[in-house]
Length: 82
Image (tube, helix red, strand yellow):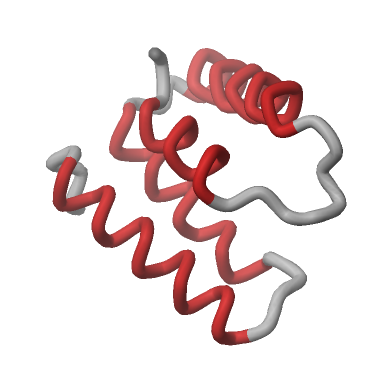
């Protein structure tokens, strides 16, 4: 898979308003592939982009904290630390 961390993220955290998580995952992946090809981004840059998006999620601080922890854990597992 092109972006394994996005697959992990989307499958483990799906907001209640998303009716079809698999469709949403495909939309996320397509958008990240477009960004990668348009701007020449690698996996580390795409990961950092996704991680930065946590700060702009319409969610409370506890959810954001959990998301940050998920990204930090994924960064360690995928060797994507900056």
